[in-house]
Image (cartoon, rainbow, N blue to C red):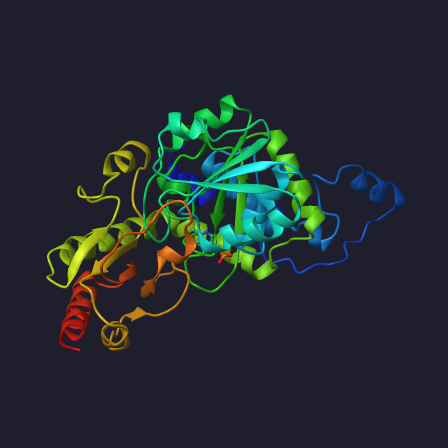
Length: 389
Ligand SMILES: *Cc1c(COP(=O)(O)O)cnc(C)c1O
């Protein structure tokens, strides 16, 4: 089965639901059983079947099996947000006294989780330069290093680590490799083919794709990791909302058609921006001038619509003039919906072992599904306001 076909058919069982194309939204807490025997049989295996709303509904299982099949995982565990999925993955593998290696470019709340909750539970986090070589990374491993956490590309600064090289070192040392693959989605990066054990996605972004639900998922390479992640999720009491998990399953069906438009718009915008005098740098892995473009070419099969630009140095009010007058780019957190966004970001505050070097402000752009001519015209007027203000 080719990927486009899999996106359409994975995880759907219309015959189980009166022929409905999509698995319907099951709202549930109590699940009733016909007999004590059926109740006892159900409780004997908490990893399959429907027992209680929090432990999973047919809507949830339909989403999980679709995402797992798409990425080639043994199984998927969904969660109420991307951050909850990250927490579940980490807590599934660490215990008090462990050491984890985390790339310095990770999503800010991932870092807060490590420095706060994990530290309090006796797990030590050591950050490393995401551009280290495998040999350099090897020197950071200790006997108690339990996990390596990567995010490639980083969602603010877009560096790309040597994922398979670093993963191989972690596996030699017996550590689990966790990666936040939200940027690439399961469509543009083969996580398990590149050595990842737990592939985490903020499904809130492209999988849901319409900016209207919170959802996360951990795709697990093998049965052992799946069991640990499911058990952790159950212990934490995490469960995705029924409408949200439905929207994730529905969004998945068009992911393969939406992403190429985001990619084409993003790249066209990035290439145009690179020619503008108000722009000093474009951070887009699919452009030949990106410092790890070769790694993107080697490991990824596409780029989503998220990238960043560095502007010539300017004051906050100039940024305000640029952003406030935009017609088609919204100002707000998150990305991956059908609409374009432009967000000033400040990476230096969320790094400790590498320095973010930039003269001017960084603007993160999400290219939506609008017509590229409108996106360029709108941004051209914005850059003119920036320069004039
Ligand atoms: C948004 C995001 C998350 C967190 O997802 P939520 O659903 O907002 O909790 C994690 N990682 C990356 C890279 C993100 O962009």
